[in-house]
Length: 231
Length: 156
Image 1 (tube, rainbow over the protein chains, first blue to last red):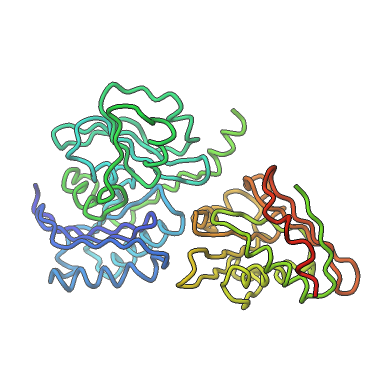
Image 2 (image 1 turned 30 degrees about the vertical axis):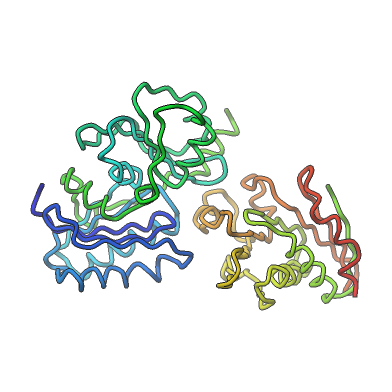
């Protein structure tokens, strides 16, 4: 582990989540599943996190943020909040972590294949595959947006599978019903958690970048829908 | 399945909307057809009221989307105006797909503009018939007969 002080912010889905870690210790984490817009919820959470931990913005090594895929509005709020924080604290670095990779980190105690899957819209999902071994997460496929059945219709994998993300339950029911060795993450680790953003940066410090380099990956579902119609 | 109704006043259009609103379920998408002044916002006022969300509905033309929610109601009504939306990319930036879930009903004005992006939906066409009367047609997918029993209970 490093000696990094990290603030994590995730607004990519239904959950708004904020965490603070210091040298691999999780000091603060809060997640709220809410109908309220993240724009109303997220900054008060950040303020509480900083107050409760007593860490100043100028002491942070980086602000980690889920940079997609996910809710279009949610991503804009999260990235906007982080870029705004960095404008107010010019030395502050940030880190864009794939939402799907962060979900995989939710389950890093698992051994086998992790598939992170989120619903983009009816029939269309965001998904990526990872291999988890000895607490290490290795990417097995890029983040993508595709028709559900394209990825799961005939899924072959000899390793145990862990499904994580807001569409994991549906995928398990539809494509893996009764199949042994295919699990859905428990509800405590099923959805986005900002602590996993901190963990991802701890494991991959090369993710740290300047705010001007921070980008969002929307992975437009509209395009996937067109591809599906033409296939 | 197609049903036709004739309303003779805004009050009747609202009353018809209320009957529709009572029968809506989470995940429903309503696609409106009909030009300016056809009564799209008026019938939405009834739908909101029928869903128990009050009748203070205004046109979403300026904001693109208005949300109607109540603490004690599971279902919310999300009212869109797609007049200025002309592509799937535009549509994504309105957050349209973020709103699609089991706790929301989406009501879409100028749905013609995004027809290719809409899946199964309830199509409500409103046609001006002179004065205050309107011909209102409800089209649902096969086997969806939940509006059939509205009959004439919207008439005042």
